[in-house]
Length: 370
Image 1 (tube, rainbow, N blue to C red):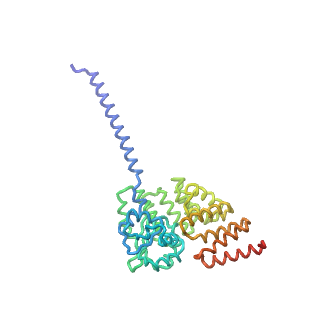
Image 2 (cartoon, helix red, strand yellow):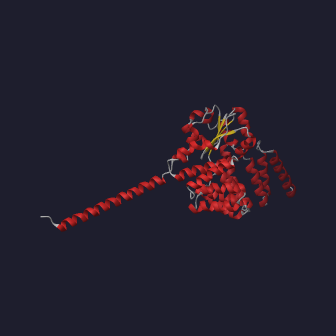
Image 3 (spheres, rainbow, N blue to C red):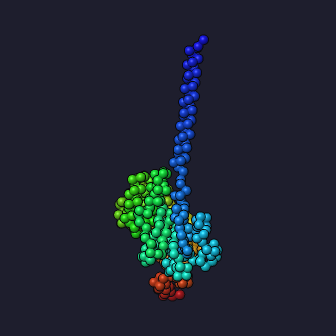
């Protein structure tokens, strides 16, 4: 005989069982979806797209590019490149800081392509030289890299970005927005402002809350001297992530630009605490510390930079010059003279800086009588 209460008990159990199963499936789906959402595409941090089609008979590359070349395009490296003690390997890192060294390398090795990987601040002197002389043409740019060539080929145009855009089109919108923003920063560095703004506008439509987008917009407005707009954007980036290092770096530039040196120094301290050995941040920290009258911090940063440069075989003359200035302001005459003297040992020190060092040595010795 069919028992009605048993039917209801079984039905209830079945309902609860199905509900529990659905709940488990929903939780698993959420977790899997979250893992997919949080999973960062490896192409965001790798110059793989730039390296894929790179061709060169003789290639110059900056320091950050070397390990990528070794792992992905060893065919573009020479035996000297693989020998850390070779003259070529020692000179390459110097060239990003000293265009004179770069020109010497060009004459010797006849480069037909340049690969620059990483943030443009890492090779700013060389990049400014390339833009000014105009004998190298930008042929490729993406969120990690730039490739210049010394030939008569067509310069990069914004339509060329379609291939990079298509690579990320099926992924997370925020990834594409980051790629657009990071590419825009590189375009700003080579004075292609209109193309940079076009990519930033596109990124803003795709993911307006992405901190990379807000930070890149802040960089754009700093370049135009529009401080209010730059402040709004950098604070938007930091509201999304208060420890977002690119935005903290941009904020220091912004505060320095509007001469709020003490505030810039405070933000720079946070950056140095998080990335204590980055030479670009150390140098900028020393510069900010000088304006904020934090001379002991300036000296500490410069001495660390000098130790790094000596270990890498890079010139130290410029750092010693700044160190001499810091000691001079602190009233430490002897250490100021010592630093200025050491700066003169650098054969690549520009003539105006060499004259400045000698003038200060003479001035200090006259004042102290030593």
